[in-house]
Length: 283
Length: 265
Image (cartoon, rainbow over all chains, first blue to last red; front, side):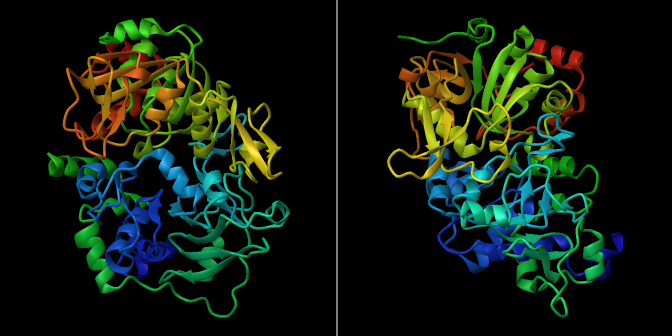
């Protein structure tokens, strides 16, 4: 699996930069653009800067700083972004926006299964979990109000891409979705360090939309805990980031390199290093 | 009527087994001084917290939590909550997992003094399949649509930490207000610690959150009362101190000493 790292075959950009440019595609129209992962956050800023000035950014998720400029990513975003906000908002309005379908979200599930169901709550049995994670959060809410859900899994492994999730926070395709008549909250795509994937609308499984440069179908299959749907001809290579996108990511939107937190193997001590550099910046 | 009190008086007035809630969210504007004082008491309470962070970890670590309702528990960039993990994985903590929208609906039911609120959330997800949950699917009496009923969340005591309060109890929050204004209207008793107690709140902007003194029981000046969590614009999250906490908080003796020392030190 280590041979599958795009960085080993391409030296001009990192897998995080690749993922950011893919995720930037989901942020279009008059929606609030948010993300549970750093890459998705930078992707929303990239979309705002280059492709979709109409989207609404928030100050690092703070409701107090609503409709912000695409400022550089830091750990304590509120300090940098809030002064650019058009207005303030609050959590009840946030969920009114969700009820009205006005959010585009990148989620960071711990498990995704072949149907597109996802899990951030627990590993094992909920009643006595092997790992108690963070709870279902807003995923069940997003699933019944937003048109689509996008997933970003930092490290594509058989433990993350599983036959069946241990606990369903969001429901994928298949007979149960059909029985419930649930047409909203469909899994739009999954982006990982290996490629871009999507889900058959009947629940038949997950297919490869594109693979990042240097990754083969076998690499992706070996890193997946279930059989991928067979490719329909040659699998395309994910479009690499453009020079303009790389310039924006590196120089304008993430000069500190916060995106390295989303690396499949972040360097030890990275959070502390970023915090220290940022402390100097903010003081 | 002046409402200036002290943190000690507030904490002493919390009855055992009370349903306690905290404002803020995750690693942001958590009432850490209040949580430490409660943890030092080691009197068991029940907790219901929208987005629980280190304040709940601290109380769990001190063994002072009988039950926990939550829509999230975590330390954001610093990872999972070690004492929540222990309590859920090893100690059989009684817990109810809510979604964020369901939790907000429950608080809004309490603010309106009705027993439940309807939501669309709950369709096709496993938290509705757990035994003993307080949520029910029901048919809307007006349209017949299938909805989820969630019970009102009415905390006995709410603690929140603010940037500023006046002596009468009016509250000013400059960063994200989270669910604090709604929780203040749902709770029976509301205790606010603040960086500053002033005679009059002045120069507020449209981006700030305020809470009327009519919702507030008492205020206390506790500078640094958010501990290592972020409090905009006073201080960002202190990653070094937070990391120190995470490194040691699995040790109950360390947690008790930490709570006894109080926040800020």
